[in-house]
Length: 100
Image 1: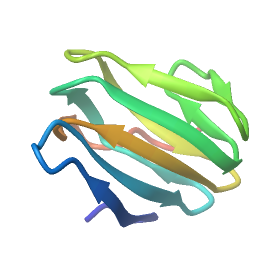
Image 2: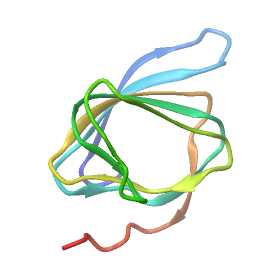
Image 3: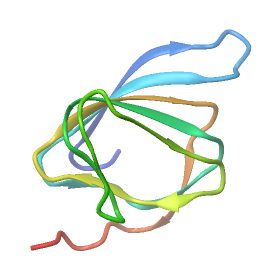
Image 4: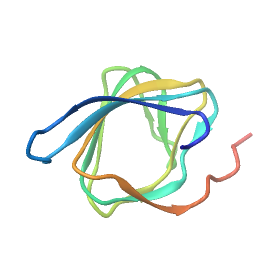
C-alpha cells in the first residue's frame, strides 16, 4: 500500500493480457519512483494528475508510459484515474519531498 492512494479493481482480461483499476490519489499524494514492466495507459477522470517532469494531465486526457520507462507521479489537489496495464511496476526509490 502507498499512503494517499486507493485502488479499486475494474476488470481483468480472461487471458491475462491486461487488467484495469480506478486509482484515487488524495491531495498531496506522491508515488515512489518506479519502472513500468509493461506499457501502462492512464485516463484522467477528475482532478490533476502530474508526472514528475511537471506535466499536468487534466480530466479527459490520457497518458501512456511504455515498458521500461521510469518516473513518479503526484497530485497536488487529488485526482481519479483509470489505469490499464498488463503487469505492475517495480519500485526504484522512495517518494521525493513535496515541492513547496
